[in-house]
Length: 251
Length: 327
Image (cartoon, rainbow over all chains, first blue to last red; front, side, top):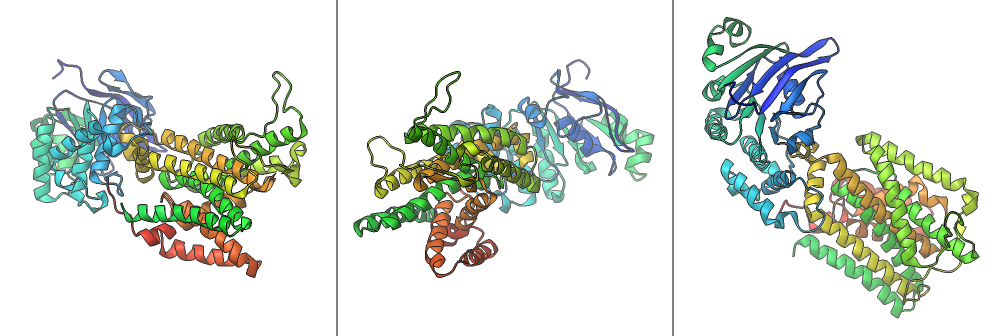
């Protein structure tokens, strides 16, 4: 696994909110082609860590590398342009717009030239075909002209991923992609994410352990801001301190 | 054609029909009244770009309206006294040419929008409202205390400025100029709303995090639309000054900002011709109710209340119905 350069690598990330150490020297990486799951109990600092990786929050110390490039000082938009494609725990979409418009927005962002004031956005065949292709892949083609607010929770999740797909991503950062999907939806999503790893590796925060065990090549366990362990599914399952801290005795 | 497009066409034809009727009936005052409504509509179209598309509640648009007005006032006052605006390092003379005045109005309001926008867009919500209000008031007090250009008393221009090939003192010809500018402003607003930039801007209003996550800076989108918006309102200010042949600090006052916002809200936020409907109704109320009672604003207030509470799409939304998402 160490043979290739990691797509995403964070080194010694520290973040403190007052007396609370939310990230304590966290170091982890995402290798090409892998799904890396980040797990941990509530309040372990997973979302804060994701924010620091995506650029919404500056770490107090440590660095973030994307494809070997130090992006620690770059903001969210700049990191996205470099290929960091993020999906949100609570869907962040333009709810008044159609599904297709949201996907076209992604395709527009990927061009790097959003300040085009002439011509119709939806008339740009390059943007539109890229958006339609992404919607087809996640299975939302039939809903392309639906207003986003009318989508079900699961469909919004799919749309979030479709938008990420339009970005020509180098790495996906997914914050709880299974949340609120139900058993059926969760299985469909698991199967879909499994096909996605060939496109770009995924770093995902997830509580659904069934999905994590089915998908993850490696798992990192975060507890009280500290990285308890990183390893394969088998290693994590059999790690006694992980069992004690997080998985409970029934695993 | 969608229902809203039909409403827009009817509105614009109506705004054309009233002065044409007044012309044939020899009622120049009605022509001037419609011209006033059209100019205020341009100011509203400007604000609506920032407010409707960008979600930027600016209570400082009088700043641009006033800058446009004073661009006209300063250039024209130098032209009428034959004194140069400045002699060093280059000699700049005043002018009474409308296109030149418009250019200065666009330039001044654009620069002001760039500077004040760059600062105020770092905030949002109620802080943004307060900061834009503060900037507007700074310009107001500056104008009040600037004796060179009339200070508190304002500045009178005795002859309306000239437009090549037209007699601007003829009300119907001046109306034609204003109507043309209004059409241009609406075209610009319409083009931008449909453009890739407009798509991103509208998304930034709904979900800034989404826009950032696709690699676009919401701040830059907002700054760009704020500058465009300020320039359109600035142009309206120059026309307004020419209509009255008078500029005064009241063009900079926060009441003016408020009135421009009333046009937008009354007509329909983010509706292309909302400000046209809003300004027309405002002027009509002022004309018909203003004659009956000094306190006609009470009725305006009541109407505004009803619109805000029961018709969020404004007057245009009331007639054209709810807007449905479409691409």
